[in-house]
Length: 248
Image (tube, rainbow, N blue to C red; front, top):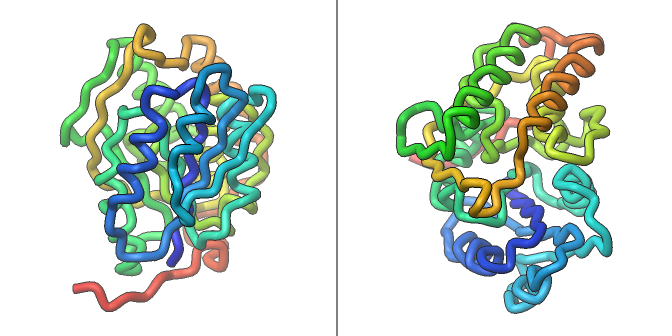
């Protein structure tokens, strides 16, 4: 197993270097690389990224902002791992939780792993609208795709790279997060969920998601739902090779 950690960054000069350094200090039980995509930042985000001198870090810079989805598209094209995980360039998520997601893959227990913020493991939502909106959108996805996931909009999603590259994804904004989940469910895959911690930022702290993104989320779910579906039992297992390990 080789893990690609993809970090899309837009105007995150205050946190991006520390986030990368925190990830580099982790001792994963597999090889890993970090791909950082500076999505046309207008502050010193790129300058902060350049302070990191480590061969495991690869950097791509967009001259103009293409949206979080656009940054993720670029990162997926560069990825060389067997599995990919998107990680935000702020401190909403705890980097040490990544090891929780890797373990079920290494033990051959899972194909896709989500970090769920709904487990009461340690969660701070910035507002009622944020918390309720996630519940509503997750419920809509479960109804449309006959699934039972608990947290569709968690950032911590660990996918096999061949599976992600098989998806029909076109969103360039925050809607790409919804499209990834919907395509996964449409393809017959169901995630193994593990508890993670989360401390959400407020709008004043730089939170970029707005109410309009919920409308886009619903549109994306409907768009993907109209495509042919594969049942769980008939999913293409070749897109998610099982890892073997001697872990206790």
